[in-house]
Amino acid sequence: MELRIPAFAHGATIPRIHTADGSDRSPALQWDEPPAGTRAFAVIVDDPDAPVGTWVHWVLYDLPGSARSLAEDQPRTPDLPGGARQGKNSWGALGWNGPSPPPGRPHRYHFRLAALSAPLGLPAGATRAQVEAAMRGKILAEATWLGTYGR
Image 1 (cartoon, one colour):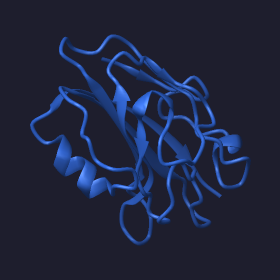
Image 2: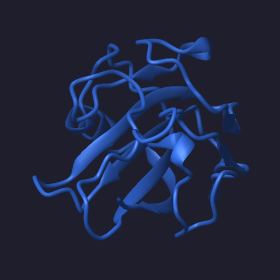
Image 3: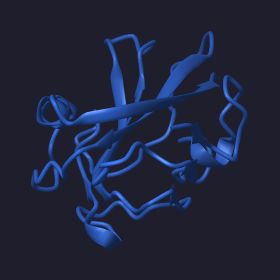
Image 4: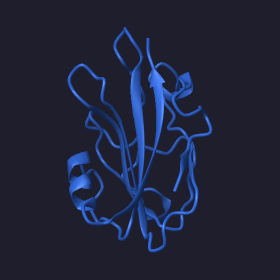
């Protein structure tokens, strides 16, 4: 399984439109065929370079197993069409909040897609830790994409 983000190449700078300095729109995600038995997906985006420790930008789970993409600019609502749910990011908000690093060297932003053998069934607003705990034993495959952003 391979994850792609059409807005920027792997390891390249995240376009301003997807950051707090721009429109703060979530980027579109695309992926190819997951392993047999995939019934759901989860997405976690974080910044391990944040001064206070790893900063979570997006937690999304229970995307249907039939999905192969996620459109740009997802609403910041608890539930998305098709049954997906959004968790809380490090700001305590639901949905995507894009890069907003302090001045200095660019930060790395890790996009992680997990193919799961079953939906997690967590209510909307779960934390990254809750989602990762619920994923244990259900991960069939993972794919990652890296973006950078600095001020």
